[in-house]
Amino acid sequence: MLPLPSHLASLLVLALAALPAASQAPHVRRLDVAPDGQPGDADALGARVTSDGGEVLFQSRAQNLLPALAPGSGSRNLFVVDVRTGAIEQVNLGSAGQALAIGFGIEWALSADGRYVVFQATGDDAALGDANGAGDLYLRDRSLGTTELLTGGVAGTVPFATATRPLISEDGDRVLFGVNGAQLLPGVPSTGPFVLRLYLHERSSGLTTQLGPLHPPHTYDDDVRAFALSGDGRWAAFSYLNQPLGIPPTLRVLDLDTGTHVDHPLHFDSLELDRGGATLVGASPDGLVAGDQDGLMDVYRIDPQTGSVSHASNLPPGPWGEVPVGDPRLSPDGRYVCFSGKDYLGAFGSVGTFQSGQVFVHDLFTGLTTLGSISDQAVPGGNPTKTWGSTALNGDLSELGEYLVYTSNYLNLAKPSGEAFGLFVLDRRTAGPQLMVTGLQAGSTASLTVTDAVPGGAVLLGISTTGQGPQPSYWGALHLSAPIHFVHLPVDAAGEVSVGLPLAAGLAGTALHAQGLDILGYAPTTPYFGVVQ
Image 1: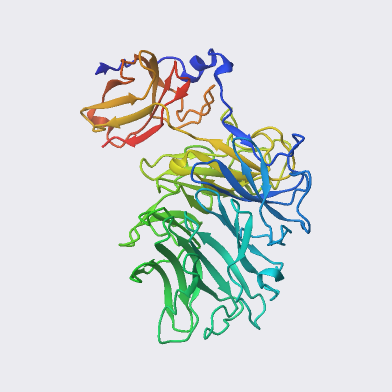
Image 2: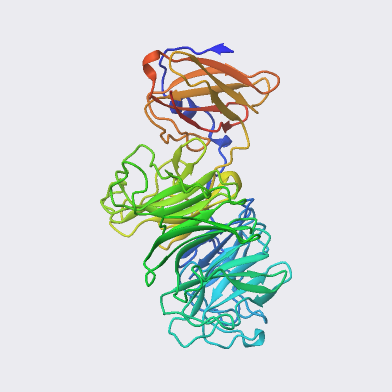
């Protein structure tokens, strides 16, 4: 293992600036692009990405994304875009290929491979038995080109009766959804207009079941506020309350295969489960951890079985201040969570902006939070000439957090740009060189190891104790802040190199950020963040 020189050199980013720009790959792209290369002529909303990051489902009011929209298309439609080719397909289609009217909220979901799209339609498809005038759920099989009705029984005398907020398992077999104010199954009376009940539909068996009543034999309505479905379809988590019974807000984690459950005295406004139900995150304003008393919405990680809670939305260093965050989405493997931060005080740094927002990605394993709504030059999203109404939101992550998709009306993210909200993808792939750090103990020597670099090449390794950047480079954003200590290291025939970092006894509690660049591979290593123990 090589010793690390202790001298301070020029900024790493200045060294990178001398390298040829031809090595740069596009890290940020706009996806809602018309055949003539123009951006969508109206807002995009609610991005949902497949596990491999290859396709993205979104809603758009744009009329120029296809040469011709399906017959009956209204002002809002659902599309799937191929990230690699840019090809766009309309998917809010009925049995005869006609467009089904959809509402404004995020009322759609995508299976892991992109084959199945489940969505709420406010219009009826009489050929499929839907003529009740209520919001129903449909499933579009993109491989077969067919559409099926999932909630044909939704009917009720209470206004606002609708099936809502569908979630789908990765294989497309199970669909979890809420029903507001309606009778879906025989013997289950209609609820009040603002009381949400939870149902599970299993396509393989054709069965729909209610997840409740939650407090039998009482007939009071349990109002579900937030719910999540694991990717494998086995686990459901939902936050509910029951005002007539005086039951405090409760978080229930339910095994859908066995019917067993655990309850925790917690309340969340939104929830997300990973593929196997082992990782659960949620947004809540309740200040669930010590020291969090700002009264603002935060994202938390919850142990599904014990109910223990930890913070998962620490913002990176920068002009962010104390801002509310929410809209969490987990990568399918459960390591990364993205969320939106909303700024009401202008702290996000855009010139004169009001209520601006950014999308962040938090690594639940390392604790590192990075800004996701950035340009190729690592510049935060912004509109220098617009004084209000600019934001980034509705993020979603693919497997291992490799791709982040979101919507934004910032003008500096990628071309083509426009005033409407666009759909963007940030390529965060870390399939190249990996950086691992062990032995981060004061008074000892830590080991920094890079693997999967180009054999016989070199790695430029940077270390910072002042923050995580980001700093621009020809490879995209680097998560280091000045001043940066760096060293040029030769890579062995196996594509690996290690270096020792002596840590003085007085460094306990110091935050350390590290990242390298594989010079011959034109690729950054995975970033590292840790605290000296």
